Amino acid sequence: MNAHPETVPRWTDLFVTRPVIAVVLSLALLLIGIRSAFELPVIQFPVIQSSSLEISTIIPGPAQKLYEALSRSLLSASLPASRALTTSIQPPPAAQAW
Image (tube, rainbow, N blue to C red; front, side, top):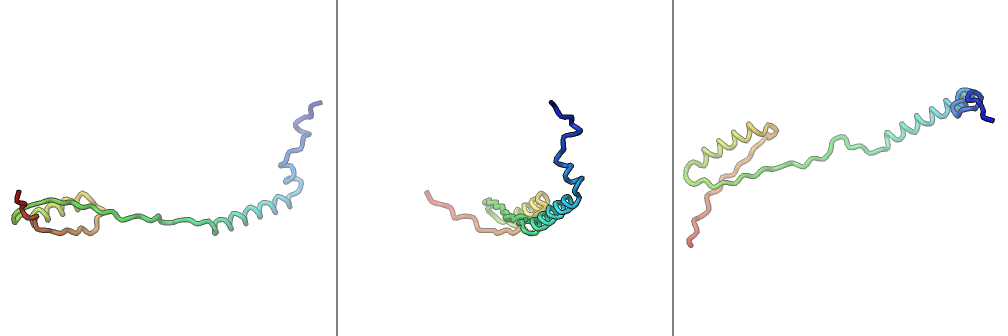
């Protein structure tokens, strides 16, 4: 015959009838959790590679300094995370004879 659901013991009834087992199991789970919290490797801040941006242009004549200042101010305004912009002015390449 089918047993009534009220008479079938559940696995949780063990903790009601024996509270010491419930306390011991709870403390064991707590200690395992604390131990694992200290032993697991956690990276607080990920490693970030610094990025670089290189812009090459050929500007003949004395306007090189003007274009450098203009491009630096435009890049500084559009890239707020850039702390220090470095520029290097190189002389234009020599004309090649064909």
